[in-house]
Length: 129
Image (cartoon, rainbow, N blue to C red; front, top):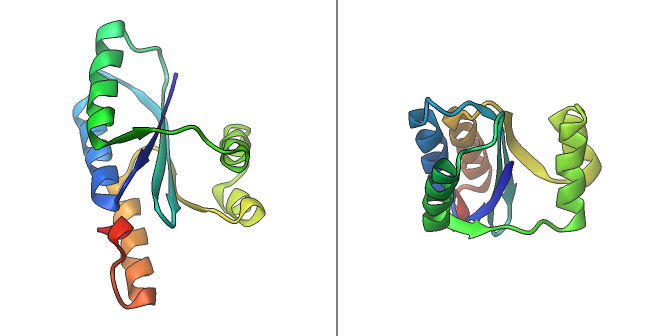
């Protein structure tokens, strides 16, 4: 099952990754993180279906941080391309989108993107806070 959410800033995105790290009884299949000008889109896919209890807990946690996201066609195509094994770099070029992370959740990907982006701008936009 996919969990697709829109988050306001990088700190919330990192909280999701930290939370997934504490859920060692759950095996995360992959997490995709996309930066958009107005926030972050994350998709979490688990290898196995969650129990109703786990599903409820995870959704409650995610709903506290962000809002469920209904992707536009271009974002759907990005996810489909990644699911078929295309490289994130190739997908970014084709769809002109910033894929910050794809695969095993890693907070250092978010931090590195944040640093490079703010260094290039000279200031930190609200979405990167």
